[in-house]
Image (tube, rainbow, N blue to C red; front, side):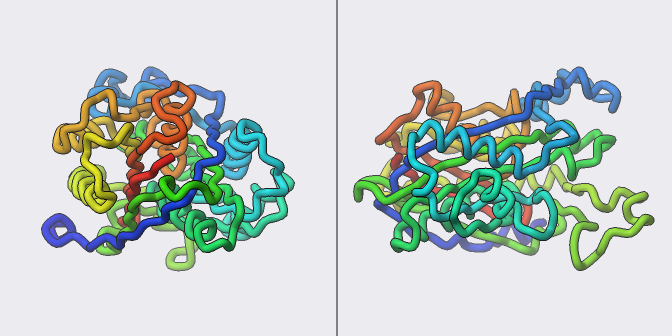
Length: 339
């Protein structure tokens, strides 16, 4: 861990101007799980809130999967935009909790929505939406897609041990979706960064979930199929990563921190967001924060927070925002986005 902090891997930077936000939507399950509901774990509800900022989260019902969350968020975005579904010719879904390993969850979403478009999953844990966004935007910028549907969705309640007092309270289920197309040259991703550091792969992982360690009765009995996280190490890394990455993408966009209308960071922990805001001199009025109600929704957190900010009138067409995702991999992505 000391190597990751002292000699971090470099980010790759770029820009994708001319991308217009054509639609925005989100969805969370109806089932609300409060901190008090978690008292069975021996958690003090006030302790959870003081350590994380989380008061409640949403959990999907037994008959729901990630494709359902994604499809509902996408439907909201499509309906609000008023576009014809035939215009959508690409689906990119960021998730690390797919319905199953085969087929891609994006293909299931495509069928749910009745779309005629290539569909693919992008896996980058809590940075999944950022990787999906840059991927979709590149297809649009190159002319390979006229209208891309980019979704971030995760059903975390299926991959976290419900008896893990340190991890279970942190996560919730949710999804957000955006529609992007070519627009004015003054819009789009004025600058973006993507990065990965596999030295931290073991800091946040599901050990029994793939070809390295296929599921066995013994492994399941030992709960090896659930997420394992070194929360303290990830916390330290996330603060330093987000602060440095945001500072650099804003500078590369030729802007100042003061010129940004809203900062939408991955909703992992209020203390991470508040620490980054303090270091960069960002006022609370320019920070999106909804993890108190939804917890950490992983790939869903950025588009979900964006949608809420849009609906509340905090951002709109022409706003300049910073989006920043970070998580397992380790992986991260940030962008200055002119909407």
